[in-house]
Image 1 (tube, one colour):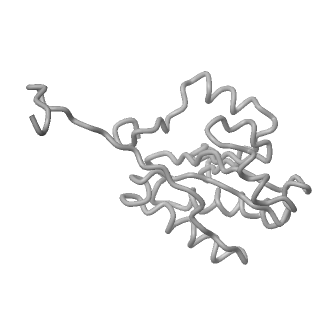
Image 2 (image 1 turned 180 degrees about the vertical axis):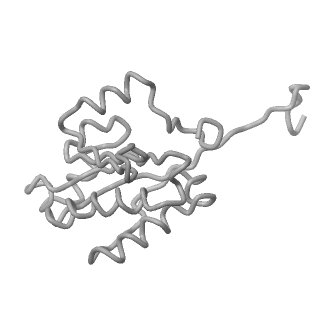
Length: 159
């Protein structure tokens, strides 16, 4: 992802360690039949633990859920390259959905354009959600990154 998306999608080791140790962040881990971890998803209702989102955004839009402390954010989903074609992704999402259904929750997440267009992550998520819950999914917001490449000669348009 370091070369596929403008925004950083890889946690630094100390950030990853902090998430692993933070008890406010749920970790949904998928393992092989031999017990080897091959995937992890993080989920939290403590929105302040997600530095790139605005908790106020969610609280303003979902006041009933906020009053019940039932607003979550799905932080990240990691699957080992060797397990990407297997059931690991679905197993983690099913585990997360169980929590969300039990709380009648509102949940947010983000997916970069590359993961949506080349890996069809939203389609995979929707397939699990449609099978497991009565849920309505909507695009809430988007951010488009731009670049500009300037000519070396420094010439300006129009004279």
